[in-house]
Length: 354
Image 1 (cartoon, rainbow, N blue to C red):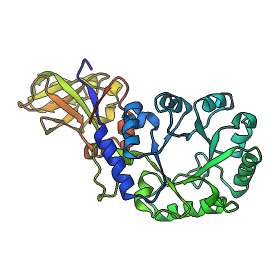
Image 2 (image 1 turned 120 degrees about the vertical axis):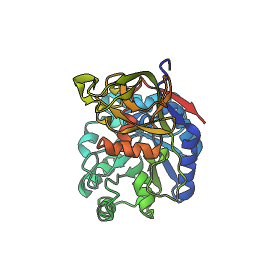
Image 3 (image 1 turned 90 degrees about the horizontal axis):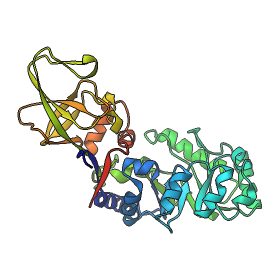
Image 4 (image 1 turned 60 degrees about the horizontal axis):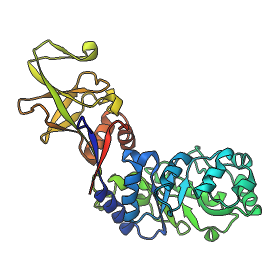
């Protein structure tokens, strides 16, 4: 961390958040920590330890690569791969004891059934998102029967709530799930998991559901203000130069900013190559607990902030301060908090505190 630009990850707050969520929503049996995309930019290996300490008893990832990386450290906790694994890599999934998702009959038919034996699978049901999943009762029954006939362990069945803001759409999804799976006894399936971060807090648990997936809620983002969730993700940098602009001077690439008065500009050691994309222009950072605006075009490795005389060379800059700030940033750049955190690249080291 030789340029003093880093992400500070609070592992104690992550553990506390997971514990708080499970305490509040304690009528599930399986709590999946969704740790894909490097734990949403937090860094997977260190963060997962806090998630498990908080009470998560299953992990979910997007890719086999992620699963293998995690398995090499966390030997015993079950790991579900939410994305597909190609037939030629089934041996890797078996070697590292990774649970697979079966997402369509066509996909299942592309796999060598003999190579599937010994692996656990979860059947993904498409209930309206139209991303991955079996989409009809007929397709579901054929997938279920083919797996059963070949003695493949169907450990779980799941779906994904894609618009929890709409109770109408969400209830339609549950109804679709019930219809598609209606020819089997769901109580005989070990794990049924449907709700994720937002649906957990907005909807009562269905009787047949015994699993939920914790994603961004673990990092302090929830509509339920009764949850005592804490911020986990901060980005720090430093002022590396202060320039005095005269009225009419331009700043940065394309001269995109013109000073309309004499002003001080702080140059900060972080840029779009680190994940602070150019859309961040015009939003606030914090220096000495005071707000200042990013001005001019953001450079690959640096950005500019309009400051006052209280800001000095090498002052610490809170580029991302807390949950509230991340929400403000995501609104400013027309995005979502997930993307704001995931965009912070590997070049920005992670520093872990408790």
